[in-house]
Image 1 (cartoon, rainbow, N blue to C red):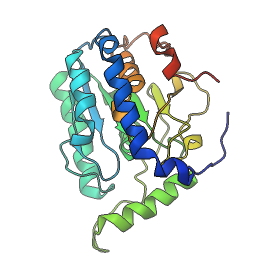
Image 2 (cartoon, rainbow, N blue to C red; image 1 turned 135 degrees about the vertical axis):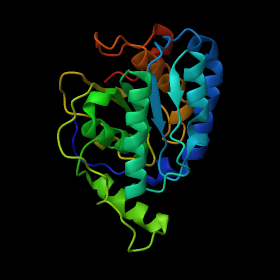
Image 3 (cartoon, helix red, strand yellow; image 1 turned 180 degrees about the vertical axis):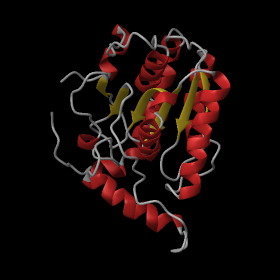
Length: 253
């Protein structure tokens, strides 16, 4: 497995927007197939957006999953401007409420920086988390990308220096003890894909898709994969296998 840091090229970054449009076009072409994806079993699913995004950015994804019977909700915390103490406390409380009110463990889905939040929630409260799915997220701790992202977050949030910030990035102690799936693309123009793969371990999987970083929330391969993973029997984890019509969307190395 490749573990070195490879920064995205300027060409990939410059073409993110048009490639995201191509991802949406692919979604329209595969819509009838998505209607046959795995159904939800009623357990709560919490979706966390990326940096400088909010619930609008994950609306289509949440609506598709909801149409398939998944009990999914957004984070309801406005624009994601980085992990300050208030945000961390709110996310912890939201996870515990969902767990308590439903009587079932919660699946966490996080896009980009939102995936880092989801990962830390899973570390902090593994008893409340059913599974973790990160999409376009640098899951490796202490990677150069996350260090760079920390500086970017501080520059764009415009918070007072006296604000009660947690260390960048938010990092809970302890190991990750829940099933985890990392979804990534090698043509990501914003996140180094080499930081988006877990070391090989039980109940860990790294799934590569074709597409852009900005298009991951409406990428048909991602939507199918999320429905499949979220609908999987909690007690019978199996690695992901794409359906035959979607195999071209999942590169095989």
